[in-house]
Image (tube, rainbow, N blue to C red; front, side):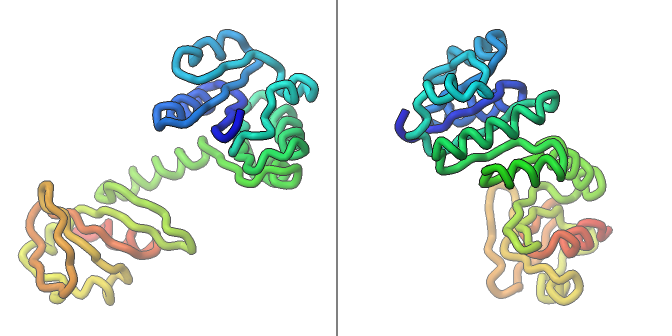
Length: 218
């Protein structure tokens, strides 16, 4: 298999990753020791194999030397297996290994044995849910790195009818308003003269803390 992805572990997380990659047009080989889990996605992927990925000989028979990325999505009940599989993939020369971590310690071990990246879907989902509950006016957010994020925030009622220059959002909240979304239209805010209308959504850049301060304005 040249290029493409291999996903090992077909619980909800692994199955979602595998099927989504396939729907985006990528070649995907899925692996699980449980035949029933493998059959759930058999009709949507290029290849599905039932085997124990901790068996080095069996893993090597898959011919993974040409894959571009492996996702180790083994579930919460098999932490030791995920570590062993990650180490085997590293030894086989897989160029990019993304592994599911169940704790900070598990993440450190996965990185130590060869994972290039670790993800913690339960932790990340919990954090996103908590922030959505705490800041309901923040509609979307995208992390930009180094503490900054791009976010869509419902314009507070107190902003309606005033221009961005008058509101002085940059000084008061330490965020930059780069656009206003009004209905289906996005309006760039190059000079700050645009008046905020009821129902507008502000597209802003700032730290998570700064966006949070803006989000709680009445």
